[in-house]
Image (cartoon, rainbow over all chains, first blue to last red; front, side, top):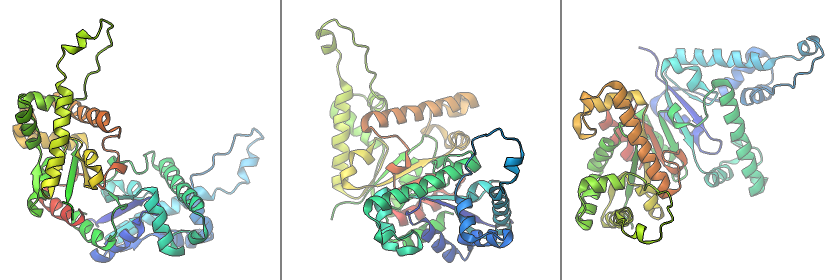
Length: 202
Length: 202
């Protein structure tokens, strides 16, 4: 029997990561989130911060300047390397044991293994509130940002995730037909209780 | 304390009605589905079949012919009457007791009461399969239809539901931001188990 795999796509600020962690805990599954970035950094000898940036942004397609091939050859293409490592690592994780994998387009990368695909979302107001409450783990300097700045930052991060996902999968991020369960956390206060219920559906 | 209300939007063929019935059963809530149509028929003295047709199709806006007002006055406007009754009946049901209401844009009609809004969907193949299995309760002569006919019929009914919902609510039918939980039943075989889990989230 193949391993049970749960993938979690999530809008930044929706509590998707917390939900994923709790689901993994309750089911006693391995949990992979930032571990993927650390592992890529280790294998490529790039910094975690740089890997994170590459792994969350679609490549900027340079405007084609016709100055010969040499020009392109001197730009190191870490994007492709990071993508390949990410792909390999996610497949390795999925083959090792039952697991929950957060983000990184794992739902698409592992599609042949038929993972249970969750998407977690909420409205912008509850995302802002969640960011304010959660402290600095999930966002940068959220508390010292104005409401407007924080809103813009959240929207920017989610735009980045959508672009990234769509670039690498050809699918629309958050489009419900690509998921088995879509959870709006806007009116949910008890994520632990929610995670308990979700384990009965996965 | 106000009543607990669960509304269920559902694609035809996705098993949403069955899920709603089971949720109501488990929570011991009132369950309203076709009861709404029967009640409208009773109050308006129209036939159930006719009410059902009106209550599930957006009105056809007639091409404006400039022949004076008399022409329009002779066309009985049952659409508006049915809409008004439907609106009133759904509000009455919601005020009576905890309940599950299937379809009819109840999520929108009752939005001020903050219902828990479910949307149930699946891919076309599993809808076709479900229709074949479910017998004649949920579709007309499904078993004697060819695959192509059944597929077209399902798409037609869902197009009707989308148009109707969008006409009366100004919202996009099935757009996840309008719901608290969206469930894809394509890979779910045990609707009873699913309903049990959903009762823990509502």
